[in-house]
Image (tube, rainbow, N blue to C red; front, side, top):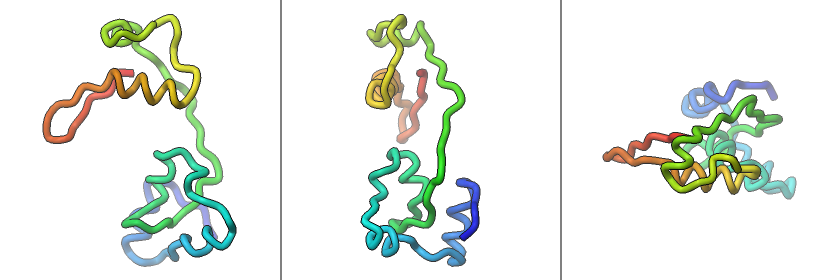
Length: 105
């Protein structure tokens, strides 16, 4: 076992130098559903789990009051939960063709 930065995980997995952890996780009674979706996606490469996050953190989330007003959100009541943040991001995301998006929150 060794700590690996998230951006390095896929490279190691794709080179075949890591053991998938799916079986170990299943036997432990744990589930990748315990992690937030973004972290779960980061740990999964080609449908296999190759890492477990010990900790994650966000040091700052800033909101754009003008964008909140533009999309009908109350700029004086920013999101207080992950679900509220997800909804604010959904409402304020502008799609720009070919699957790309620009997030404003």
